[in-house]
Length: 472
Image (cartoon, rainbow, N blue to C red; front, side):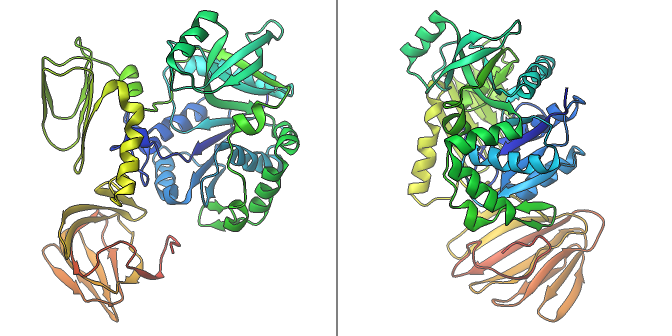
């Protein structure tokens, strides 16, 4: 069996898991089922088997540093981390991976994996990969179908056709959209239907052969974007102009529904896409009343609920079938049977021009993080933490001044032509339009309080002159 080339796609925003999942730090980067993020679990799942090459990771530009840091934390060096300038769904991402793999590992079947899936039975998963690899090497385009545990309306379905040989492998007879409840029940009664997992395996040459037949424009523009890509630190940045002209489409629609060589391997691996709070409740360990709780939670006469507290006590009394999510800036309460509709709340936030769907109060940056403490009409207060050896960009602001107070650590502060060292309880004032920079000059995290004052306090009021991370 050839070595498998995993392709981990990390481009989603996870809106149905709001307010924990947000655009700048979505669900795949969160620790929901263990101490590791779902992205890390996905990577480790294929890195510990001994049958896979280092992963190709495809992500969007905004998440690049968070993903690089999470890879570093689990000691995984990817084959390449590809940056998409904008989202174009799974078909272009798969085409990019196939084009790249043809150059680097043409004999290795590609394994397409979303970064936000939960898989309980990893031994069964590895067994499924072995069967999939054999089919992919034979020229088939493989999808893995999940044996349905119930009439789920949140997943697409795959109807199996004739059986191939002695293995539990079938030709794909039909892909179907997410059904209504009655249709989903009829699928289970009829049998031969499987949930569409979104995991695929195929040789790179076979995928590109099919795509050149079904969607040649996608392949052509993806090749242009890859040929004109540039190296940026440890990242491979696709050409924005070329990639913006790529049609957005999924592997299912662009390829799998049209090819005559699609096969489905039914698997029972304890799979969930953790697409909503109700699906997370389903796979979580619950108490004898059917409740899952995390954080500071006290419940009385509460049943079948999912309760998560991040910053304060949440107390419940006499409620049932609820999802209650508390974070430092949002409390969400929802009917557990309607959590597929949480995205409507996110759309309402966007329409109201609020930013709670974009950023957490705790905002990750390549140099560390900052956290909002207080916001006012003409002032805001932040806690800033800078990693040892790291520094913010050399920058200036046109509409705000800043006052820095060192809480812990050693800071090197540049203000115009002056450079000075600040220790605990020492401070610096940065006037409007002063060119300035903050660096951690010590060997422990630097913690400061920043007070901003001015007529406009948005993050886009910034001009960068130098930046170690090549941000605009």
